[in-house]
Each structure stands twice: as C-alpha cells, then as structure tokens.
Image 1 (tube, one colour):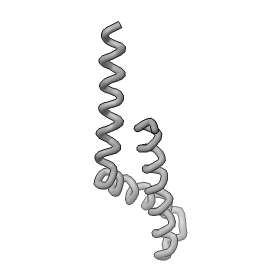
Image 2: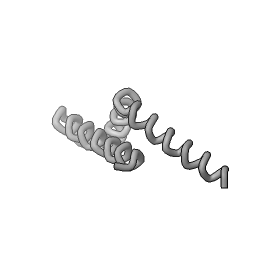
Image 3: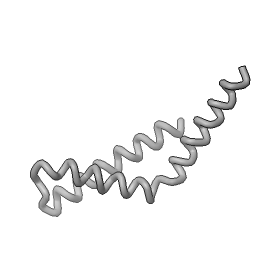
Image 4: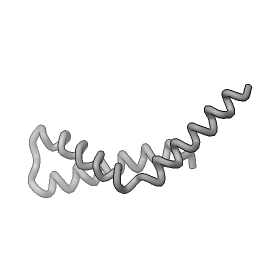
Length: 69
C-alpha cells in the first residue's frame, strides 16, 4: 500500500482512539476535539516514525525522478 495512505489512515486511527479514550474518561464538551487532536499528534510523533520516514523517502524518490526528466 502507498506509504502516504498508510500514514494518513494511521493518523486518523490514532485520532479516533484518542477521541474515544478521552470521551470514556469523561471529557464530553468542546475541548474534546482539541485534546484528541493534541494527544493523537503527540502519539503519532512517537509511534509513527517509520511510516513518516517511508513517506519522506517516497517523496524524495519522486522528486529526484522528476528532476532527471
């Protein structure tokens, strides 16, 4: 599967998990989305480094290939 798709789906999954956990903990007002966004962003920084590296490598290869034409 394309690395960008994998990374994007992983980010969305982490957001959904963070949203669910924060909801179950009792946060049910407007800040729920903000906190879920922040928690999922921090979690993705730590947990998705391999996927992020794969995306950047794919983009670098495409950019090098485009420069050779």
